Length: 442
Image (cartoon, rainbow, N blue to C red; front, side):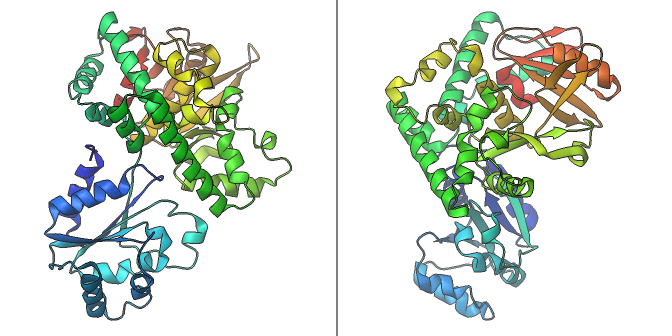
């Protein structure tokens, strides 16, 4: 399997929890949850039982409908899976736990019993229909899993040197040199094309064939579409999802739901967005009506933008209705010949990197009273008790009018301001011009 950072978090949970909590890992389909959890169980315990509820026998599912006799439950599991369990040295994994809500509810009794550790994985875990009839156990500790980040992608390619070098340059606030920068940017564009879904990365490593990588990503998108239809049979979730590239291409100040779904009530739309966000396939950036360190208190739920959780999938979704042979995005992006109207790819990858580092996504738009011009700051992140505005450029263009105007309006709230672009690191007075591949260090 690929080296994943979440593995260290699993080790930390085991050491700190000591059986007092179960660990629930949720994320979009195909991000590698089951793989990393089983690898962890194999390495860190004497034995483990993995119950995959997507194919578990009915007799196994029924065991969790009555957990009053845990001795009987554990005996049956050992018989069914032909694995011996050892007290305080075995873990039981509930894979795709959303398909057996009663098993998730049973976590409370199982953890209180204390004999074994428990891990749960799943997608669509927070979708309403998967939780409406059960008591959510307070003994659950949740952990989100994202697609492979840029450092994990480099690890997969056998490169362990680049990321530490970038970190040292970022911390020293200096550039890496024009020749090295061009190579690094090309490598980063490769990440944008392939993305962080382990299957797509594996296909690239094995075949070095973009067509085959694209086919893998199309299969994943098809899985998502199937899931959306299960959640909402009207097809509205699929329409909202498929329209994300077009909505970003409009360069509007928000996702214009009315152009995708005509006549839907606001409350129904917000419910659909909540379901889509809970699927972990998309990232939602909300408008911060009052950008400050506590932006969650002022976010506008009806004013938002949406991005895909994986930029590699985004590049495929953009041309979903075309055959791969008509798709020139791979060649153009890799060779830095991307037209200006495709710059929102960079917005998506920045959103992905910020989210994978634990940032909630916010943006801000405002009218300058003097010029009567509308401005937008692409992302605003909180640091300490201040904020850092980010303006994204898909080129080396260094103008930052939005940042300057935002600074005039909120100077007392700003810690640092960043222009994210495609040139080497530099500082222009108090504006930090940051190459896009250094965003993970923010």
